[in-house]
Amino acid sequence: MENKERYFVYILLCKDGSLYTGYSPHPKHRFEEHVAGKGAKYTRSHPPLKILMIKEYPTKHYALRAEYFIKRRPRKQKIAFLKKNHVDVKSIPINFKN
Image (tube, rainbow, N blue to C red; front, side):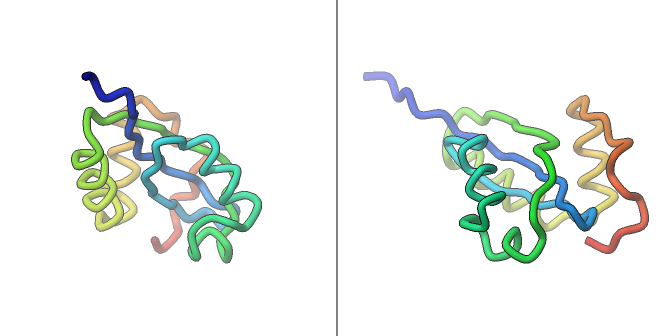
């Protein structure tokens, strides 16, 4: 039997200019939770502005590894990753420490 579950990593731009990376099988619903203050502790104090990228992975394992890898990258590398995935990064503040 084929597994129908889908696995995504998403990157959010927060109102303060910071970037947040997360994992969810339902990233748009998860974004709404973040906006409502019901998401991660980080996004409760850094409310999200918009979804910059959603990327699908073939398994939950790969998605969680990608999330872990992205979260630990410096900001410049996260922005380079976004560019590589064809995201318009002009709205991301350059001088921010995260």
